[in-house]
Image (cartoon, rainbow, N blue to C red; front, side, top):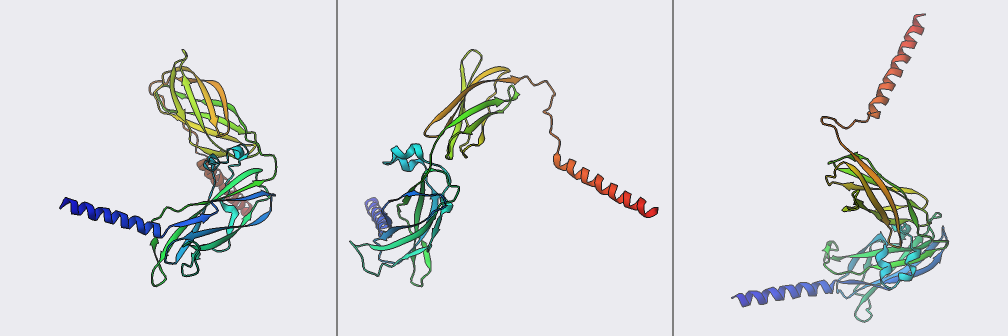
Length: 309
């Protein structure tokens, strides 16, 4: 009995896989190299999608900005000139979604559809290599022409590669790392990082904390964030360990894939007096409202006295 159930289960798995393959969608070519472009330029870009399905497919085209993972696959020599500036808004499709008509003539058992879009390079686009990733999302049509659900397939994406003319430079420095807090309480280390290059960087801060004797206390990480050229970003690294009162040496580094900036600093944790509560900052909103009320009262009083004269 168990053998029969096992056979039925295997048949179900294989039939599901076969259905998935039947509705698979691929792209050609997987990488479209547009070449060099100027700031403010428009380019017409084309690629093809195909399927071995016997049913017509409606394919939606999702766009996302490319990342460093693209360069790890045969393009490492371009990595140093890559701009991590968001690019997903630079694509304007002629049609989205597109339909693949499987009833038309096929090539090598596949039905094809050309996709055309306009690549709009902003006038202030950063120099260097940019990547846009386009992900086809196929939907199978039912007998009445209504979508019956997204197919369960392993679709492939197409990457659009182009180089905006100019001097692409990836570099940055840490200006300072600071922290203020009480001993045995959570606090935050702030690392001030300046992007001294000409392209957007995507990085995170790592801070190693040492006690006064040079013993490694722990290592802490900030969230990842984008840093635009010639701007200063503050990486905030939370420390939730209960550290004792005293001085600590910290080594902060900001890694942005193609480089790392590092800086040493010293922080001091104060002893919190018993019963002492952190000082609260004044509520600026209440102050503004109170000031407006006073001004209104003064205006009303002035008019009242003026009418009495």
